[in-house]
Image (cartoon, rainbow, N blue to C red; front, side, top):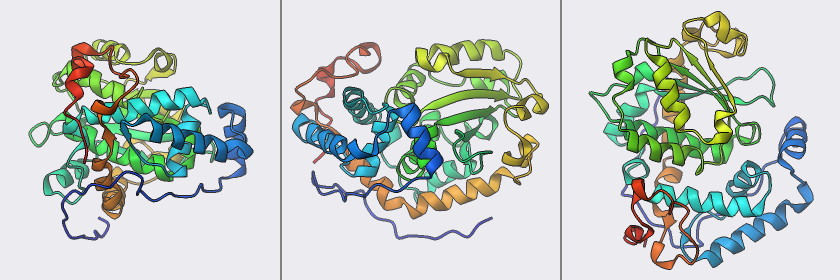
Amino acid sequence: MSAKVELPMKEVFSVPAGTIDRMPVRPILECLKAKAASELNEKEKTIPEELEMIRTWIKQSGHIRGRMDDQFLLGFLRACKHSLERVKEKLDTYYTIRSVLPEVMRKRDPLDPFLRKVIRMGVSVPIPKTVNPDDPKIMLIRADAFDGDVCDFPDILKVFTMIGDILLRDDDQMVICGQAAIIDFGHSSSGHLFNFNLSFLRKASILNQQGSPLRQKGFHFINTPKGFDLVLNIFKGLMTEKNRNRTIISHGSSLESLHKYFPKSILPTELGGDLGPVQQFVDDWEQRLIDNRAYLVEEESLGVDESKRRNTNPLAEEKDLFGTAGTFRKLEFD
């Protein structure tokens, strides 16, 4: 197990609007430049102007309390293929959905003893390697690592968003090339899979699809249990039309089938690969979240103030889940 650095516990703090440090845009590999240009409509010369337009829009919106640094906003530009109108919509959804899911987006301190137990479960963990530097990155989700006696699904999603926030900031390959998910059910029973609140799953799907700038490129299921077809239908029903049209493959219990898409050289031992046990990646990410504690805690000061909104709430059509827009007015961050 990797060594852990313990940091002193601190209370969650608020950051006055406009004081979050700006981070310059990193240079990227030539292969990523080519992919960003061909698939995401990226033109290096226009990026500074586009970023300034987004910052101006955030300031003028009045209700969004968000990050202004270049690297963060560039992730949204790339996710939206440099359509400024789509960036505005996704940024608004990103902060609005986070504001109405306090069970996920609050108390995200990686040194909190309870949350650390959840992190150590390793339900979701990025795989560090790909065959090519411009392939989609791989996110491994291990259903049987989820211990319902220790935590609830919102706690698992909380850790997932913490990892996603660091990837959005740090991983240009993930942002430009997207991510493919390998969902390993291991020894999960079908009953284990239905131990979820469907209303919350719907909220989570909005958070991870409409509200996330990290793009899905495919879903691969392995070690699927009896009754999985019903689970898959529910899973598809929670997807946007775009994601339903992505690659969705059930490999049953066949590692040979999985290896046709993901060779052994980039997979952990548990999936018949050569990278060693998954636990080493879980340990690495536990430390990485601790190292980025200040950034994650800072996120709690960000969100929306509905009392200052001048446009339509992006979740207005989801009244069954969130109520009317008027019920959001308590969500203020000072």
